[in-house]
Length: 79
Image (cartoon, rainbow, N blue to C red; front, side, top):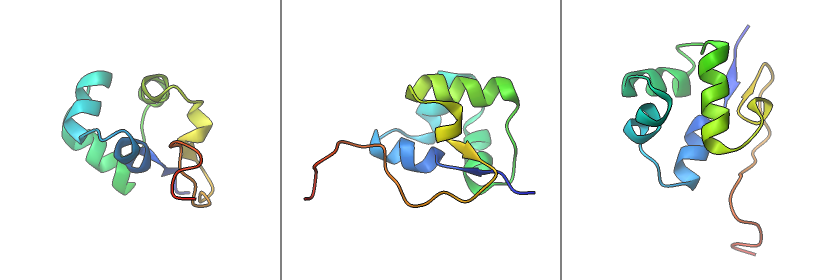
């Protein structure tokens, strides 16, 4: 079973590098890359740290089902 995530979307919306996120949650930047590509499943602790860092529920970042395209950015932009 695959674990899908929106880490790259959240990082992009906040103009955040993999290194910056990795430092914020206490992992190696390569780990963030592995997570984004789906090559690595995070521990519960890491998933919660990432969610806390972005200020969203863990279910908004990680899912067993594919996400519909959705951003977390500012509403009303580009309309």
